[in-house]
Image (cartoon, rainbow, N blue to C red; front, side, top):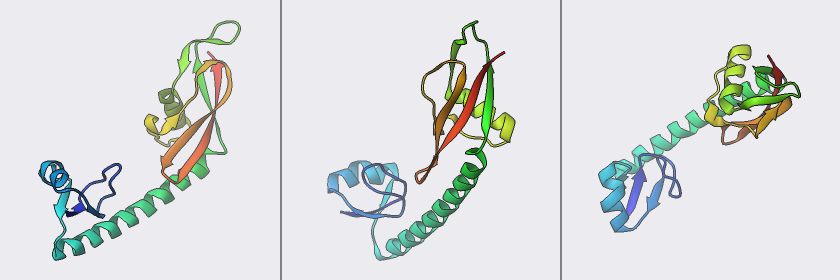
Length: 147
């Protein structure tokens, strides 16, 4: 059965794509949940408009992510935490801590879920990986210092 996706479906396609799926999958899941509509002639024209809007939104999101990347990649952010005498932390530094430091120092809000921070248990300089868009991934450098 030919369908037009109304939302992104992992492993199947993105919003506005025309896909061929089994009749049971279409009748029992995609159509009742509102994830797809049947591909009639009028709906195909609507799917073209959905794809065009998706491509424009994707391009603007990529531009915004690249602008943020240019701003943040050259900076080093400071995170003050409680630490022992030898530099070992009481706890650890998480992605939420890095996101809060970026927002406090650069006034740019980054979702903590878009950051990947390795296990940080001592003071020093580290890098987190930020992935704001599928095509834009960049390092965020931060320094962990004792209070």
